[in-house]
Image (cartoon, helix red, strand yellow):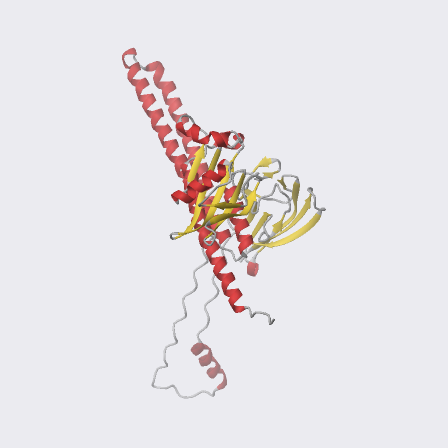
Length: 417
């Protein structure tokens, strides 16, 4: 299998400058220990970017839905981009320069075409027959015809080219759709420019109505396509989250992965994760990011210690209802419910329970505080559904980690007293 060998020069940030040479068919940048190239900086996401080798395209750089984005040669990476020697990647204060790049082709196979099938093996009977003819003295021809040689095995079909990744296919489809829509609107504009001066006054109203109808139809088509795109993006993020969560990790690291994924994939600013204790019938704060007002313990019954922060009330509502709770600043009655959050500068909040079947394990909570981040895309019910799905995956991962730890504790002999 072909792979890349890339030499990077890394400088900037708090770490000293260094040179790194990496090989593989995929190189991931980020803070996580799973990444091939770790970048220790708060700006960098756990899994920030990836370079993949594709036989049809070469080395392709993709942003893994990072929180703060990525630039290639001072241009923001929005779609998978080809990478070449001399390119500069920027992760906030950290700069990564591609000094050398080499494609290692397996078995000296040319990169432009698939390897040819190996020649068919010569049958053993044919080889033995020729050997006997060379060594044995000539004899009279036998009346019995020789047995036919077995048929040669069929040649192996040439390997199929590797398909593009799902994200690459989605981005390719999106680019083609946008080009098609732009061309279609341009065709209609040219058509109206030709028709309008030649239209009789008696038909002007009908032509105008037809134009409005076509424009409305194109707008509806665009909204449908945007809905499909957003649904596809959410699915890709969920698949990526499932892959990362399912990796073998200790419980504490798995909890950190779950919370960081929830904040990073949703573009949130902060959040927390709480675990449920059946013995105390309460919640305990396991992790928090960017928050300092959450109580360490929350009893689900009995007296409370007023005043509780609004996010604690949202957490209680998620426990009480057993479903995901979504709050956003809006007009009317919704604004009244969100007033307590608005006073703290929160524009939206989502809290999802983590459950295995009917057993409640804890909560994931995320907040959106940056209005600039919400200007391009409003947070809605679809985001709450995504966090709900992540909560279900997280619950299975937590339960699995607990069972593994329990089995390890049982298998470890206790020290003699």
